[in-house]
Length: 102
Image 1: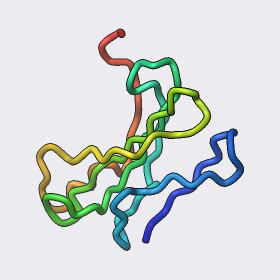
Image 2: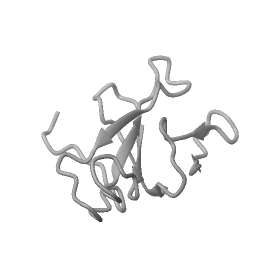
Image 3: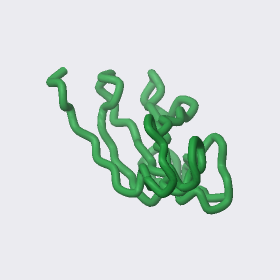
Image 4: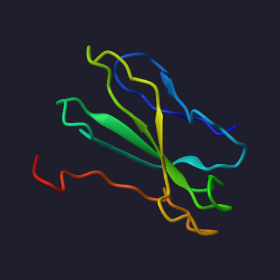
């Protein structure tokens, strides 16, 4: 089971993991932060480039949004590769940015 651990500054060794882990899914290879849901709190995106949902090694991304109190994270949400093809490796490298100016 692949598990990525991030130091969030709130809890020592807080573990954020793929909600559907599979050995060799490559989670944590790409990590980015940003306010994904426009609530003013930084969220975490974690790539899982070898995830096999849709096709072998198609990859996906797992999103961890900050909770309302800004003391931890809500349940992880998997963002599937929208057009999975074998060996896409979606999530190998990821970035976050405000692309629509909100």
